[in-house]
Length: 150
Image (cartoon, rainbow, N blue to C red):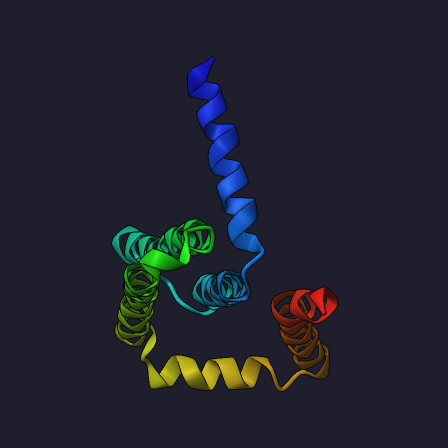
């Protein structure tokens, strides 16, 4: 039974991370990256593994960062300098992972011929409208919860 409870607790952690704007941003970015990879690129299994693990790493670091921030927010003022350093280090880990993800993305996706195909694909008005709607929905998913909190 403890084994199954661990999945429940992990799920709660993911839901908690979903409450953070940066996690939602990285989740949307991963969704767009995976869409473009699936639609326009013929990746080998190895390239797919690199892409998925890179996205997962950024989301995992963001989840750990959320946990550290939540824990640190409940600590007393007497340890505030150490807490600030811990929060900064956790945020730095996310930044390092995100920069690494950009580098992986450039390595995997940089292909001028495919860029032309992508532009051609979105010249069709219905596809362009779908892309604009998807971007608007992602923007809302990332930023509107922060607005509603106010």
